[in-house]
Length: 284
Image (cartoon, rainbow, N blue to C red; front, side):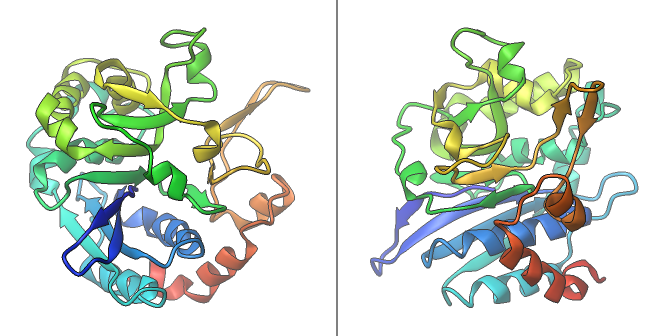
């Protein structure tokens, strides 16, 4: 997903967001947007990049219409734009990384430079990122001359990049400068890297290696425990080391686990919205 303030002719302020994935992530997009509209009444331009790959189906028009109607409750000018980029993606598959544990749908965002409608500043969000407070200060970040702004990766920054500077970014929350990205041909270079080089976290690793980056505070992509100043909570995989080592993945739509294992209740109103609309979100 993606956001930033822009001005249009009638003086209204709007924000651009971007999400990527197949039909299996519709619940994540809904939850993320339901949390977001709690903290802004501005017009939203929501860009969704989707594709049909192997046995995975693209998001359909019905969901776009439902989602647009839902967010228009807060601002009647908000819009959802759906782009099926199956041909573009299947024509340039990240062959070296198709068999990794990370879904190739993560790499759809690397094709956003091919969508002319996506321009200026855009806030990309993974579908397991929920808002907890106003995020205006993040959008106002000056990224002139940078490809993107983001936060250090909770674990990766301790292993990759400059460990002292912790300059290895998590790619789940990124403020993108699409004009600079096109100027630098960044996404094209990242696509080639994902096609030719096998990497542990393909698109994230490519972005970290090739992008001109600006680091922002961790509150904009909190991958650990929620803190008082948390703006976006990212439900990433985390590790437990005692009594034995274990990797744990709990997503916001895993409601019982969010409550009982993570002890998180800050999103209960959003989760209730998901339950009330579950048939419309998931039904096809």
